[in-house]
Length: 171
Image (tube, rainbow, N blue to C red):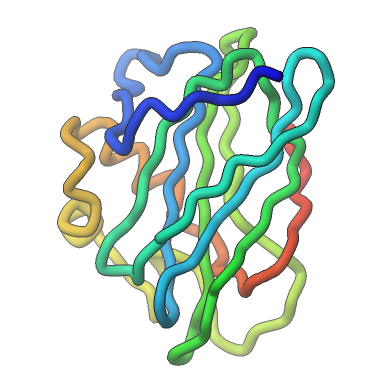
């Protein structure tokens, strides 16, 4: 079975379309108590399905980023959020994914779900407002300014989700 390979927490700059093919970048924002876990399902070139889990996601003062070599795998659109414990007005885990497929095509996917909420639970919108400076202080692992701008754009507008399993169409 072929699985995506973690390359690290820093992200490759996409300046001048520099993101290589078969590369996935993940940005995770959590508001809640304790630490959460994010998981995504993939299908390898032979059709075998597997999961990658990212544990230990801390509260919003630290934004987690990961970059993977997809190695020919594709995202299925199945995701899981675990350990999201409410502690305030808006709570949950938001994720943004940017990837370039093996045909050089770009894709962005942000967390979203049809559950009803009474306060806007979207990253970078009140009460979770954030500007570039705030984002940079919460994601110091991003060493390239262009990668940091891309990561900020990818997660902005993502909806915080409670623990659960989610299906989001991958286009």
